[in-house]
Image (cartoon, rainbow, N blue to C red; front, side, top):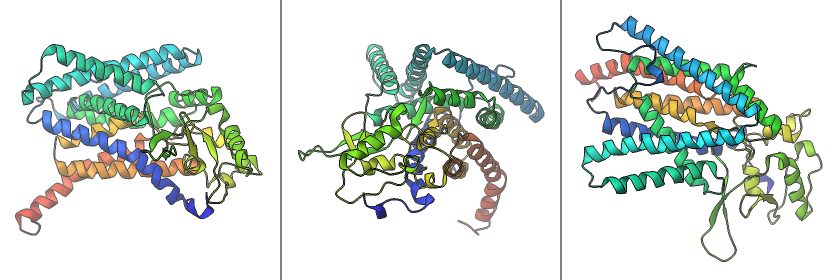
Length: 420
């Protein structure tokens, strides 16, 4: 790969990663807004869940009572999430990985089968879709079963796995939008603060989980969206290209790269900077290990664009530690984003859609801006960072500014024919 083909600045290297992670987040938010607009029109339906365990909001309550009740609900929800996360860390520490995978698979099946089925029933009733119960049950079971296999079997096509992860996030986010309004907004802020503490504090459960997974060189047992690099591989027969993904063994990232670079006689002299300082000619072919087939080194280099240009300045750290450091970077160098981030981004936008589409646009732009800021911080600090705080803070701020300032201003301008 020619030297001038690589990214020259940090922003250039960030661009592709931002697009890869922004696309599924945008799709998930759009689908939630679509569901809310279609199914929740002129309705005040609310659900009873663990998020309303301490207080049930009613329209006759005062604003102060609603705020205090929403605060109690949020504290109870965060406490339950914290306890469950610590239990997950304990089980992972005791190497109960199979049990965790079974539990995650069962949870995914419940979300796809029951939550997705309930939404499908609402659509069938609303649009009078002619379908019998047997056909519906068979289709729903197959849909949920394939989803579990897609999420927890690495042999499945990457776009199928990513699609099902987006659907799981969409279903859960839609049900969160059915919570009472005050509880929803306070819960969003509480979860952003929890995410900040759980990732950055030394005893935070998410930080402990990430450090434990890194020390063992294992994947985190959780629903995580990974923007793995996807390349087009030509089989040489002139047929359509096949999409494949870079997937190296976590324990052999640096060794595999160096060994495969030796195939064509171009070996990087310094092992500590081998990933970030690769130079070659146009007709050089370097091979990286993949899950199926082979991809060229150009695509392997794209797998870690966030770290390749910063490794030269990290004199005291090895290439392997840089590749594996941080919750946001996967073993292939791609950014990983927890499905909970998808859910709460979509909850914010979905709740805004219940008020006005102007608020939806403002919240979406705020979330995208916050996500971009978080990705840039991830590129600079090379460590585990929470994805919720910046985006949720900007989203909530923009929602209330739009609702109480921007809307009033635009309405007055329209009424006085200043803006029409």
